[in-house]
Length: 63
Image 1 (cartoon, helix red, strand yellow):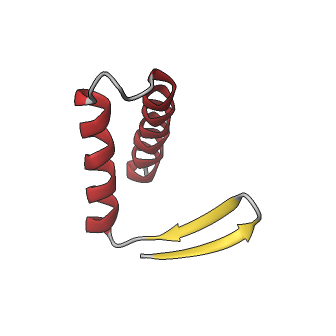
Image 2 (cartoon, rainbow, N blue to C red):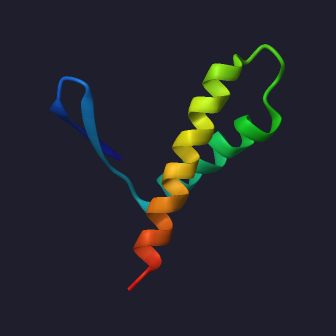
């Protein structure tokens, strides 16, 4: 994995497919089975991030 700061609040990440898959799987696990003490706002933000990821993957698969 490699991270690069593009602007103060913008990072660019380069991942191997298995690294990204591990991060996405962990995020899905948290959204699906987070304990009650995890703030709903955090779960909502993570859900939106996963939805954006899923959309990007669909666009990559479209010729």
